[in-house]
Figure 1 (cartoon, helix red, strand yellow):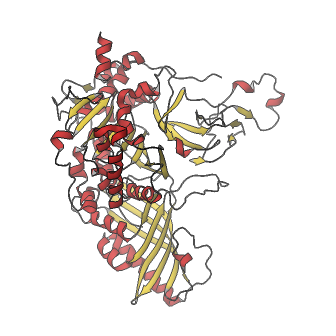
Figure 2: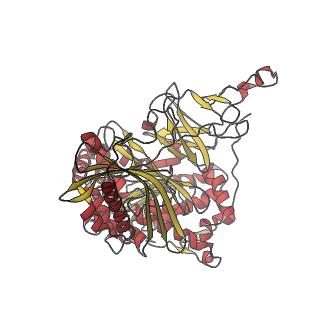
Figure 3: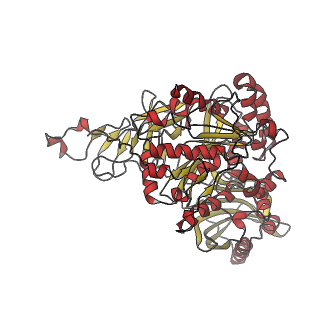
Length: 452
Length: 185
């Protein structure tokens, strides 16, 4: 039984729902069931998706259960220290073989239905009873849990794809790794997730939170006025050097926006010791990252890795918006820290993300309802035929920027969101990675090379 | 006593039920608290019912195998609440803002408290209290969130008033089946 990796198709009609010229998005992308199924096929069965941080499964047999799109997946550390990931479904009758969120030092997984057991490498080890042992046609060696097509990690973060044709993880990121390193490589010793994960359900389309983190600092002033008042005693402040420093940048639909104000995000966690820590870290990181990225570590900023993995520099919340139908997501959120950070700093980050970006946090509290109603109103037939406006910051492209990717001036800008939806349209339209990696969202240098 | 105030330690089996008068007093306290929270009188709640040395903890619940030594939750890991008085007061400050959109228009609350057991401790005027709750939030036309759980409280009498010094809250959900927790438990 060989793994079956579904092939991509092409949905040019869906791709046209993103209108680059008018900077509009057709609302059917948020509620239409056929479009959602096409997303599972074109995006979630092809793109590299975040699975786990290396620190969550340090020892052989350590495992956790997660999702790739709607597919249930087990991620397991192997005896040789590599990581494998499999569909969490028995090849016999399909039941889940792992019912728990996570565990340590497992020797394998046993299906509760008929007792088929699998090693941590996914191979079928045995079956209950003696029936199969006496069946000469039964080829045990050919049966196992379905592995992901490719798995790799980047500076502690493990990703996988169901597409054997997908380019390498580094090619999928392209030069966006330059921005990822702001959080993943700002000091020696690497990073880790502290604590466990917080999971919650939001009745919204997965693209609303993804586009929010890819480049919507605009909402912070209005949506999060109450949270900012509660923690800072005042409004969100983009800093005196906004005009000079603030930017958005995008590569292949991945996007980051930052004000380069050093500690604006960290300050909102509400613990002065953390602000001091990030100030010192920022000074120290100049050698490692250069001035621009050193200023970004704790700045007012946000980031999404296409399609559904997001984080906030400085606030250190990392999260996945798992799709659960067109109108529902499961949000899983973790806290990232530098391994070499003092214990009390790690503890303050854990509490800080809880106080801000968790279901009871003073910022996240007010996000969910916006995304739910932005989704739900489109059940109205006439409503969903009204396009949405994504035209803030047209003409702000900064072609002379020395930073990688499509760079735009000003973080109060829809530029990254336009490129996020352009990337979405590329996935809908193209059935191959050559086109996918050389389209409009590709880094400008690569597009220039491809054109020659 | 130090053990009783250690947020990471469960009560275990308590076997010192208090007299009827004390039980009635504690029960009244719990019902008053529920009524204040129903009415979103959060400032009054924190000012009059919460001790300055409060520890208020609600971990998230992992699904784990029975033989997993970690168990379903562990203090020091992720939580919905792991608050001192400072953190609780920050949350209350947000509710006091007119732009707390998830609470404007107002949410309709019902905090139902039951299964109350009040036990004496080694200290006079310090009580260990079990209770169970159903928390219903409904807003706008049809948005409804229901959370069930259990609590382990320590109440302490000072200057004639009972105040909450420790609360452990265990909900029955794994994935929180709500977008937010715009209430206290």
